[in-house]
Image (tube, rainbow, N blue to C red; front, side, top):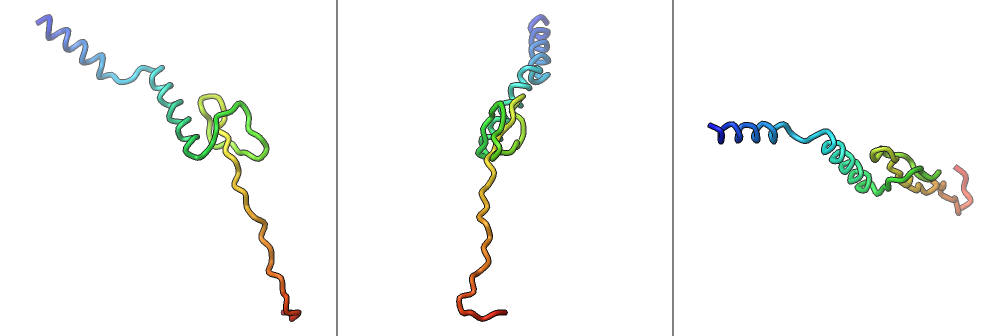
Length: 82
């Protein structure tokens, strides 16, 4: 009977899931991994050419903005006007 009580105590203790601190650590790790997947970095502040993707615990995840080439209109070399 004692063995059954010990087993049930252990079973219910383990089956309750992660503690609050373990959940927080797991969430922080997942956020950092997500930040690295978008080629970001967790920093104290972002530069002007970066944007905040999400937050790694308390620090922002800074991601470099994509460079967009300026669109140039085609040059008319024949001299004809449209």
